[in-house]
Image 1: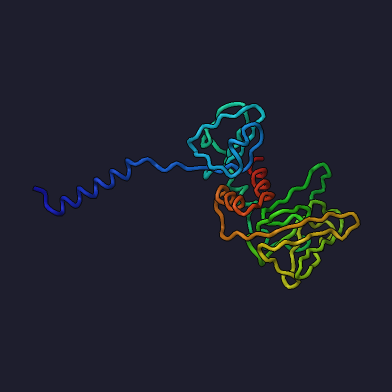
Image 2: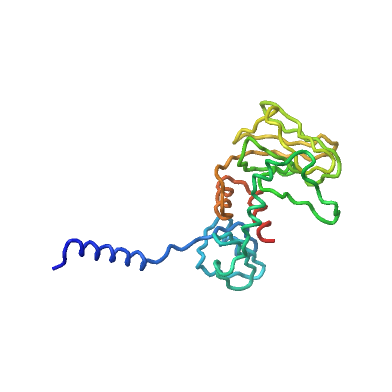
Length: 242
Protein backbone atom coordinates (compact mmCIF):
# COMPACT_ATOMS: atom_id res chain seq x y z
CA UNK A 1 0.00 0.00 0.00
CA UNK A 2 1.22 3.51 -0.75
CA UNK A 3 1.17 6.23 1.88
CA UNK A 4 -0.92 9.37 1.31
CA UNK A 5 2.29 11.34 0.73
CA UNK A 6 3.50 8.93 -1.94
CA UNK A 7 0.07 8.90 -3.64
CA UNK A 8 0.09 12.70 -3.77
CA UNK A 9 3.54 12.70 -5.34
CA UNK A 10 2.53 10.10 -7.93
CA UNK A 11 -0.57 12.11 -8.83
CA UNK A 12 1.53 15.23 -9.25
CA UNK A 13 4.01 13.46 -11.53
CA UNK A 14 1.15 12.05 -13.61
CA UNK A 15 -0.37 15.50 -14.06
CA UNK A 16 2.98 16.98 -15.08
CA UNK A 17 3.49 14.16 -17.61
CA UNK A 18 0.06 14.82 -19.08
CA UNK A 19 0.81 18.52 -19.46
CA UNK A 20 4.11 17.92 -21.23
CA UNK A 21 2.57 15.24 -23.43
CA UNK A 22 -0.21 17.57 -24.62
CA UNK A 23 0.43 19.13 -28.05
CA UNK A 24 1.47 22.79 -27.97
CA UNK A 25 -1.13 25.22 -29.20
CA UNK A 26 -0.44 26.19 -32.78
CA UNK A 27 0.55 29.80 -33.27
CA UNK A 28 -1.29 31.71 -35.96
CA UNK A 29 -0.27 34.62 -38.12
CA UNK A 30 -2.53 37.25 -39.66
CA UNK A 31 -2.74 38.09 -43.38
CA UNK A 32 -2.05 41.83 -43.84
CA UNK A 33 -1.66 42.02 -47.60
CA UNK A 34 -3.06 39.76 -50.29
CA UNK A 35 -3.12 40.17 -54.06
CA UNK A 36 -3.52 37.86 -57.02
CA UNK A 37 -5.76 34.92 -57.91
CA UNK A 38 -5.69 33.46 -54.37
CA UNK A 39 -6.52 36.70 -52.55
CA UNK A 40 -10.13 35.60 -52.02
CA UNK A 41 -8.91 32.42 -50.34
CA UNK A 42 -6.49 34.33 -48.11
CA UNK A 43 -8.13 37.73 -47.50
CA UNK A 44 -6.65 40.44 -45.31
CA UNK A 45 -7.44 39.65 -41.70
CA UNK A 46 -7.47 35.87 -42.14
CA UNK A 47 -5.67 33.80 -39.52
CA UNK A 48 -3.15 31.27 -40.83
CA UNK A 49 -1.46 28.71 -38.59
CA UNK A 50 2.34 28.77 -38.48
CA UNK A 51 2.27 25.08 -39.37
CA UNK A 52 0.06 25.65 -42.41
CA UNK A 53 1.34 25.17 -45.93
CA UNK A 54 -0.01 27.65 -48.47
CA UNK A 55 -0.08 26.86 -52.17
CA UNK A 56 -0.09 29.93 -54.38
CA UNK A 57 -0.63 30.52 -58.06
CA UNK A 58 1.34 32.68 -60.46
CA UNK A 59 0.72 36.35 -59.69
CA UNK A 60 -0.08 35.74 -56.02
CA UNK A 61 1.59 37.74 -53.25
CA UNK A 62 0.64 37.29 -49.61
CA UNK A 63 2.19 38.92 -46.54
CA UNK A 64 1.60 37.29 -43.16
CA UNK A 65 2.69 38.74 -39.82
CA UNK A 66 3.52 36.00 -37.33
CA UNK A 67 4.64 36.10 -33.71
CA UNK A 68 8.24 35.62 -34.88
CA UNK A 69 8.40 37.93 -37.89
CA UNK A 70 7.13 38.69 -41.38
CA UNK A 71 6.55 36.10 -44.07
CA UNK A 72 6.17 37.26 -47.68
CA UNK A 73 5.08 34.54 -50.08
CA UNK A 74 4.91 34.99 -53.84
CA UNK A 75 3.55 32.36 -56.21
CA UNK A 76 3.56 30.05 -57.85
CA UNK A 77 4.65 27.53 -55.22
CA UNK A 78 4.01 26.02 -51.80
CA UNK A 79 5.15 27.79 -48.63
CA UNK A 80 5.09 26.95 -44.93
CA UNK A 81 3.92 30.04 -43.04
CA UNK A 82 6.15 29.62 -39.99
CA UNK A 83 9.31 28.65 -41.85
CA UNK A 84 12.11 31.24 -41.59
CA UNK A 85 10.05 34.45 -41.29
CA UNK A 86 11.98 37.69 -41.67
CA UNK A 87 12.88 39.14 -38.26
CA UNK A 88 11.41 42.66 -38.22
CA UNK A 89 11.29 43.52 -34.51
CA UNK A 90 13.67 46.50 -34.79
CA UNK A 91 11.84 47.87 -37.83
CA UNK A 92 8.47 47.44 -36.11
CA UNK A 93 9.77 49.21 -33.01
CA UNK A 94 10.99 52.17 -35.08
CA UNK A 95 7.72 52.42 -36.99
CA UNK A 96 5.58 52.50 -33.84
CA UNK A 97 7.89 54.29 -31.40
CA UNK A 98 5.84 56.87 -29.53
CA UNK A 99 8.98 58.29 -27.95
CA UNK A 100 10.06 59.60 -31.35
CA UNK A 101 6.70 61.32 -31.86
CA UNK A 102 6.79 62.89 -28.43
CA UNK A 103 10.18 64.47 -29.13
CA UNK A 104 9.18 65.96 -32.46
CA UNK A 105 9.44 69.73 -32.58
CA UNK A 106 9.05 71.99 -35.57
CA UNK A 107 12.32 71.62 -37.46
CA UNK A 108 13.25 68.27 -35.92
CA UNK A 109 12.13 66.02 -38.77
CA UNK A 110 13.39 66.71 -42.27
CA UNK A 111 12.33 65.49 -45.67
CA UNK A 112 14.65 63.79 -48.10
CA UNK A 113 16.85 65.98 -50.32
CA UNK A 114 16.93 63.27 -52.99
CA UNK A 115 14.23 64.11 -55.52
CA UNK A 116 14.30 60.52 -56.84
CA UNK A 117 13.19 59.12 -53.48
CA UNK A 118 9.46 59.06 -52.80
CA UNK A 119 8.94 60.14 -49.18
CA UNK A 120 7.09 57.67 -47.00
CA UNK A 121 5.45 58.22 -43.63
CA UNK A 122 8.12 57.11 -41.10
CA UNK A 123 5.78 56.48 -38.15
CA UNK A 124 2.51 54.60 -37.92
CA UNK A 125 1.00 57.23 -35.59
CA UNK A 126 1.73 60.25 -37.80
CA UNK A 127 -1.40 61.40 -39.61
CA UNK A 128 -0.75 61.82 -43.35
CA UNK A 129 -2.50 65.07 -44.35
CA UNK A 130 -3.03 63.74 -47.89
CA UNK A 131 -4.80 60.50 -46.92
CA UNK A 132 -8.47 60.09 -46.09
CA UNK A 133 -10.36 57.25 -44.46
CA UNK A 134 -10.18 55.89 -40.93
CA UNK A 135 -6.95 56.68 -39.08
CA UNK A 136 -6.02 55.05 -35.79
CA UNK A 137 -4.44 57.05 -32.97
CA UNK A 138 -2.69 55.60 -29.94
CA UNK A 139 -2.20 58.85 -28.00
CA UNK A 140 -4.87 61.54 -28.24
CA UNK A 141 -2.71 64.01 -26.33
CA UNK A 142 0.16 63.96 -28.82
CA UNK A 143 -1.26 64.02 -32.36
CA UNK A 144 1.35 64.59 -35.08
CA UNK A 145 0.74 65.35 -38.77
CA UNK A 146 3.04 64.35 -41.64
CA UNK A 147 3.28 65.60 -45.23
CA UNK A 148 5.14 63.97 -48.14
CA UNK A 149 6.36 67.24 -49.71
CA UNK A 150 8.44 69.30 -47.29
CA UNK A 151 10.08 71.67 -49.77
CA UNK A 152 8.25 74.82 -48.68
CA UNK A 153 6.19 76.27 -45.86
CA UNK A 154 2.60 75.02 -45.97
CA UNK A 155 -0.57 75.37 -43.92
CA UNK A 156 -3.44 72.93 -43.66
CA UNK A 157 -6.72 73.35 -41.83
CA UNK A 158 -8.33 70.61 -39.80
CA UNK A 159 -12.00 71.20 -39.08
CA UNK A 160 -15.24 69.58 -37.96
CA UNK A 161 -18.62 70.83 -36.81
CA UNK A 162 -17.13 72.03 -33.52
CA UNK A 163 -14.37 74.24 -34.94
CA UNK A 164 -11.06 74.29 -36.77
CA UNK A 165 -7.32 74.71 -36.29
CA UNK A 166 -4.38 75.44 -38.57
CA UNK A 167 -1.60 72.90 -39.09
CA UNK A 168 1.53 74.74 -40.23
CA UNK A 169 4.71 73.13 -41.55
CA UNK A 170 7.84 75.25 -41.81
CA UNK A 171 10.04 74.82 -44.89
CA UNK A 172 11.90 71.48 -44.82
CA UNK A 173 9.73 70.17 -41.99
CA UNK A 174 7.71 67.04 -42.65
CA UNK A 175 6.12 66.63 -39.18
CA UNK A 176 4.25 69.10 -37.02
CA UNK A 177 2.08 68.71 -33.91
CA UNK A 178 -1.55 69.62 -33.40
CA UNK A 179 -1.91 72.19 -30.65
CA UNK A 180 -4.36 70.57 -28.18
CA UNK A 181 -5.38 74.03 -26.96
CA UNK A 182 -6.73 74.88 -30.42
CA UNK A 183 -8.40 71.54 -31.08
CA UNK A 184 -8.70 68.12 -29.51
CA UNK A 185 -9.41 64.94 -31.44
CA UNK A 186 -12.53 62.98 -30.58
CA UNK A 187 -12.52 59.27 -31.49
CA UNK A 188 -15.28 58.47 -33.96
CA UNK A 189 -15.42 62.05 -35.17
CA UNK A 190 -15.03 62.96 -38.83
CA UNK A 191 -12.68 65.79 -39.76
CA UNK A 192 -11.71 67.56 -42.95
CA UNK A 193 -8.00 68.20 -43.56
CA UNK A 194 -7.48 70.73 -46.35
CA UNK A 195 -4.46 72.48 -47.79
CA UNK A 196 -4.81 76.26 -47.86
CA UNK A 197 -2.69 76.43 -51.02
CA UNK A 198 -4.47 76.95 -54.32
CA UNK A 199 -5.23 73.56 -55.84
CA UNK A 200 -4.13 71.80 -52.65
CA UNK A 201 -5.34 68.46 -51.35
CA UNK A 202 -8.38 67.81 -49.20
CA UNK A 203 -9.18 64.65 -47.24
CA UNK A 204 -11.98 63.42 -44.99
CA UNK A 205 -10.67 61.55 -41.96
CA UNK A 206 -12.43 59.60 -39.23
CA UNK A 207 -10.24 59.02 -36.19
CA UNK A 208 -10.30 55.81 -34.18
CA UNK A 209 -8.50 55.22 -30.89
CA UNK A 210 -6.78 51.95 -30.04
CA UNK A 211 -5.38 51.50 -26.57
CA UNK A 212 -2.31 49.70 -25.31
CA UNK A 213 1.29 49.15 -26.26
CA UNK A 214 1.68 46.44 -28.85
CA UNK A 215 4.89 44.47 -28.63
CA UNK A 216 4.21 42.37 -31.72
CA UNK A 217 3.30 43.39 -35.24
CA UNK A 218 0.66 40.68 -35.64
CA UNK A 219 -1.20 41.89 -32.54
CA UNK A 220 -1.19 45.49 -33.75
CA UNK A 221 -2.29 44.41 -37.23
CA UNK A 222 -5.35 42.71 -35.74
CA UNK A 223 -6.25 45.92 -33.86
CA UNK A 224 -5.87 48.01 -37.03
CA UNK A 225 -8.04 45.57 -38.99
CA UNK A 226 -10.74 45.60 -36.30
CA UNK A 227 -10.81 49.41 -36.32
CA UNK A 228 -10.84 49.66 -40.12
CA UNK A 229 -7.53 51.56 -40.31
CA UNK A 230 -6.59 50.22 -43.73
CA UNK A 231 -4.09 52.93 -44.64
CA UNK A 232 -1.97 52.16 -41.58
CA UNK A 233 -2.35 48.43 -42.12
CA UNK A 234 -0.88 48.83 -45.62
CA UNK A 235 1.85 51.06 -44.20
CA UNK A 236 2.72 48.41 -41.62
CA UNK A 237 2.68 45.59 -44.17
CA UNK A 238 4.79 47.43 -46.74
CA UNK A 239 7.37 48.64 -44.21
CA UNK A 240 7.88 45.22 -42.65
CA UNK A 241 8.01 43.50 -46.04
CA UNK A 242 10.78 45.73 -47.42
